[in-house]
Image: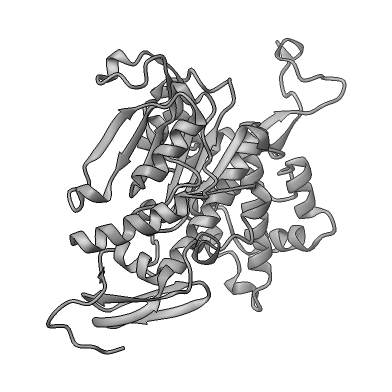
Length: 414
């Protein structure tokens, strides 16, 4: 990025920060701030160990300096501006989840498709946070990163003192790491005169049992029930019986008789409903528990891809992390780091809703062909001197494929 282009971006960012609504963090004086400035480009030197005593001081600084990237610490410190980390005196930290398309298996190269995929991951993580961990929406701040993903800030007092190992365990749970299906498919004592406590059964042989899916109504148990029943429904839609349940036919105890019974369960009035709502596995199918567990174990990869949350583990485990400030601009895209309500996520379109610059025609010199979808338009930019809307000019410059204005020895292909 040359000096003229850096000045152009800084002026555009400064114009934005003049009236921007910045999501200043709670306990502002206890946060460390960090910045990357256009004046340092292309080195991208980070300036950190800064703190602000009031909202006005922070906002004046953003307008006056107009940085390319703005961060604050997820941690609370007694002395946030101390130059050495061990002198800051750590007081606690938000629990942070970072979803970035770069860390998703099989992520598409197309930016728009990439953002759609990471949004699906955001919904999965949302389910874990609300259902499994029991956080309320008021305790969670959801933010589009301005780049390729989303940040979830958990501000509950219950998490502020968690160490790195505890936070890593939370990530492992959400991702299904070391998930063992044998803990979910069990024979349990039947209710009734025998009771269910171990003391009641002591010394009694042949205690009546039933096969059940443990934890069917919440957490991973609920997800297992849904995955299993969806599989059964999908297989029974096939036209010919001989092509149904190929995964189960590999099991030595599964033959045509078992397949027929599975079809009957699926097509019965309450068969799948009993699995979903009661965790029932004691159907008239010999070894159904064993067969179901066998199927789930063999489907582990697909199951976790559907339900597991692909969270960036180092970010969550880091109790001194820097995170982008909501309301700031992302210097790598020029887009808004936007705070969202959970109800807004479904219809949120980053390539439209996080674009803050105008349609004003702007001249740029493009170094290589580039394609992107912005503001509902498919932009295919060729090498050379081009005139594009300001929002596209800012985006292309931030991505490093264009400079502002004319450059010598470049063909004019407007």
